Image 1: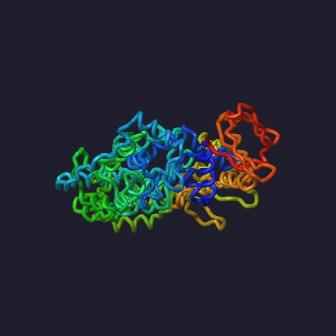
Image 2 (image 1 turned 60 degrees about the horizontal axis):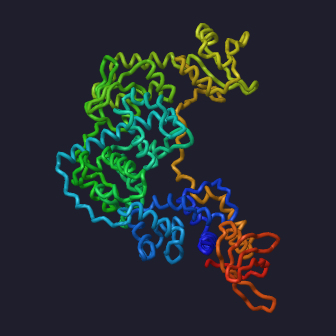
Length: 581
């Protein structure tokens, strides 16, 4: 036991910072751990409870190798495998004593987990009907995720302390038609996270820059992005050396010691079904686009494209202020149309409705009457109906009647309007009381300590025709959207564990060989273990004593010498080495 702890501590100390951080992360070590040196780390990682947790992260092949007499990582192709990453084996791939004991206990409790399983049957090509149904599911799912990301882009989705999206936001998305069933949300957000389109940070979900680009991409490219992310984030046990993955029929048996794995495997397969990778039934049939992805090839929607609805780039504008898309509108066009109109239905043929509020919201986001007309004229198969043109013109005339600017002289926000009645209504509006608006005598304006953008959005939410002015007095477009999260990888383990690694290296470097020896003796005393102590005698000769370690203090080790039936006290400075009996 003592020698294993030291061997592991020495090996951890020899690892580079990046490799050490990966091991700490894989073992689930807290970055705030109270470890002071590498011996503390070795003790923690060799703790039976910690080893048991690590074994649940091993797939069946790794468990079988650990339980056999063959070194766990003896296969050159597995030299950097999970047992090595999890610090369960030494440099030769042999399990540490404590690890071997916990493996033996696990094999006794669950012998089936340590037996290899036969290969699953090879999948058969799916029929055209099943392929068409899968492509339709993928198309529908892409539309749902687009709705979710668009809503999240404007207002981040709140998360509960346990992680799921709050009930309020879940209901908001369901009512808006983004979800058919509320329980779909976590799967869709999981797909977005795997593809780097959204990120869960602290208590909210936010959209990344890649997510913004994805919203404007055509459906085949959307699917390819999701499929690549799905494959990349599959657990290691499901991946193949060719960068592919196992057939879903084999997934359930991959992590036999993990009690949470069956539910996780079901979720992964369910996500694959949603995105048209797998059939809705449990048959072994496989689609051509899935076969290529599973073989390790890049995601390619070319074979799926024949089953996808053709996207259109024109709509019918109606005199009743609606727009009818006779088919799925191209995502980029749909995105812009929804910035100035409310989508009332989403199907193969979608309906959008223009209102004063929706047109005003578009102007708030930066549209102008001219830009709207140009966009709609190009989009429409029927021209711009007179009622819609009048709605745009009247909204534009009223938009900007209230002006919000920053007063550099006072550091306050100024609210102006040529309509005295409108300004008076704002001053007494109870919904705007938090702004603390004050009337500027003789100036026909209001003033607030609140920042300009906050005042602007408060007035916009209260449906006032407001415009923001920049420092020169010119209208400035203010976007409600939260800034997209940069599409950068999550913090590397090395950064996460930087403080802990500095502490471990500092402890090891200052203690040196004497420190290791003292820690071994402390462990032996704590365990009342029998140890073999090699002592250098005054004449330079070395002599071995087998002791039951009893105490350590004042630079001396006390222990019971069973052979001589006496208690010995040995100077620590004279001890050359310590070993297990």
